[in-house]
Image (cartoon, rainbow, N blue to C red; front, side, top):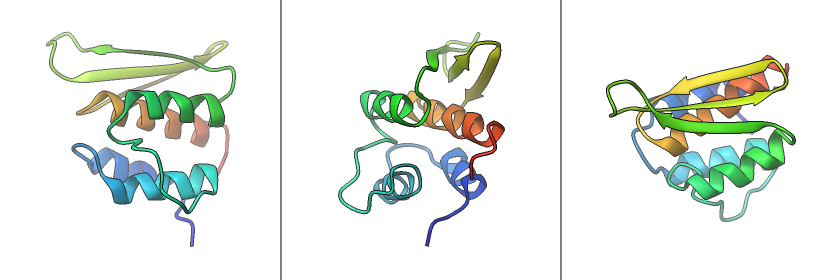
Length: 107
């Protein structure tokens, strides 16, 4: 059974690092894949590959906030800019992606 995007967003928000169970949930929901998923929650490259699959034509930016500690990410297309912050770059990229998908009305 697939979980709703909102639930996935909450699980990503609560994560503190790489999580293989969460990787499997992401793969199942966003790619329809039930095999061995990429390490989305621990790999920037895996997140960027996912971004190009689920949000084609969108641009991304990552960095660290003013305190230099916590990362942030933005994904954008045209005038739409989605921001997220959190504990790791992969997790903030995932959060921004889910926010963009929700804004588009995808479930």
